[in-house]
Length: 126
Image (cartoon, rainbow, N blue to C red; front, side, top):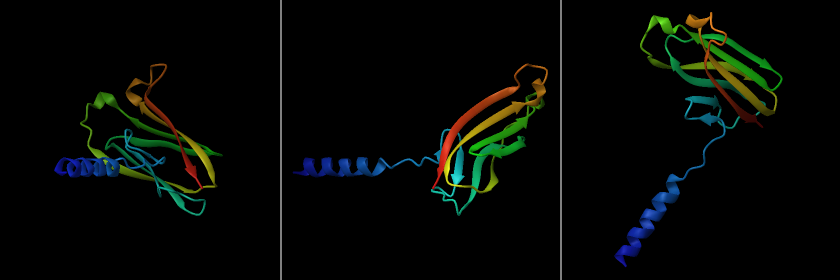
């Protein structure tokens, strides 16, 4: 009987730890759209964990497409100190948005492709 109780406790803990993931959060990328379940009446923001020396280059919204670019200079050899940056997108109409994030290394402008990192994703506004 004791073994059955232990088994039920372990099962209950396992079920509670299987939480639903939110579509507007990308934990691998440290990128979040807030509010978590946005509507067309909400002011939409991006909260992104970035290095302190990354500079916002472009934040552009065209219809349901968002281009978000940051740049840095790798030749400066600075340590990365993480900070949260909040960008206001404003009030957006309902629909599914695609975002493209590009991190551009300005020390390599002579190269044909100075983009160091690219991430594409989607989020939904009800």
